[in-house]
Length: 522
Image (tube, rainbow, N blue to C red; front, side):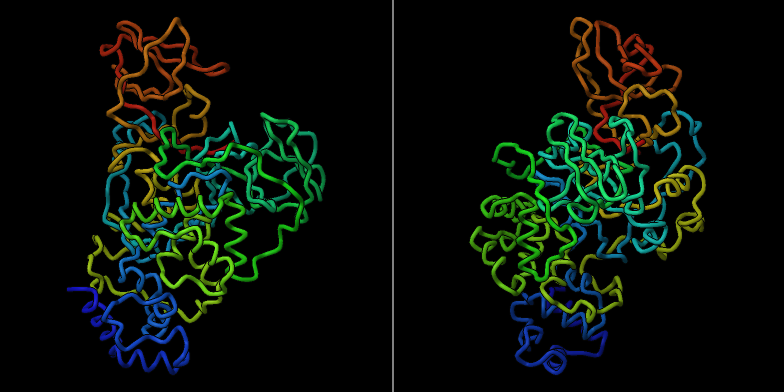
């Protein structure tokens, strides 16, 4: 069934034909309106965003579902926001657009070992029938903000890495005790200032002022007035750290420099779409030429030339008062500048309140989704929100399931075809052999990378982390090197273990290299 027949079938479920939709859209929005659906739409089937919104309104099917019918999967496309190299720290769009999609899920299994030891996550969990995204979102107790650390965020580096994903708790945006707290122990906050965002340790000097810390360049420490010079968006409480983060887009070309922190009113919001684009581009630190280069990467990755935007076209968008005609161009703007898709449409004045609210039935899509149950329960009839054991503990501790990252796991971990077998549980182990593993419950492991670097005169130069399997069946995780016939596992200053030596292949062997870490911040 081609796309035109699919659209005809969808309209028929509402007792509509294309001619009826064309007449009704003219009656509701006006015959000369951009929302008027042409009667010959089937000819090219390239409706504008206005016409898609009209279809959504008249059929009461969700806008995201109509986009999916036209071959645009917003949740899948959003994975590219992690693959764009950025000078400045950028907010990530954490919206789950298709809440009816089926998500692979897990259930408890009889554990093969104690949860107090390092072990493959598959020892505690097993795959279960798929669950609806809406049911998984309902498990989340509250919402957090997520940001990608930029290459030139002098306040976040070197504690975080460029490409690290941080989570900020909006409830703790303010109110941290004031005073002379040790700067090395002060919490990190996500801060918005006129030129962009930064992730920094801050100390609240009093109720109206706070201090930004810069560990490598103390001269950059600044004092801001709360809600006047800058806005604190939340306290950073977690990080997803990709240790092998490879970017394929064209890297930034200008030399590194610290972002301008000139005072301005952070409460001022864009009043139009063109204003939003201009401010977002400046905060992202892109010139028109650089943004166009990134759009070329997006078009090449998605295999669709319409996602490309020339520098002159990007300049025009900051002058015109109308959104891009092609929906692909609008998506490119969102990906490059770090804007939520619905935020962009609202800024250009599209009445999203008129969009349909009902999800399309699965059988109306050309690509049938994976199903396994009614979406509300997992294996053995246990409701998702009542999971016990390790899974229930993780859901309660983390409070939100970041489903928007589900399409980016291969990119984050550097593992093609990432699966449950690539994850190790570290949460129960008290022996942390590296500072990054403190408060880190999960790590991703590349089982094909099993050869650490050889040691050189007793100096540990390799910062890579590995999972090691001991002869007694237990696991270790930390830095290790190879001596002739020996596998040496190194601790860190002040850690619980100094150095452990094993006969390589006899007393212990390397399982794989750690490629990503999920950790809570103290």
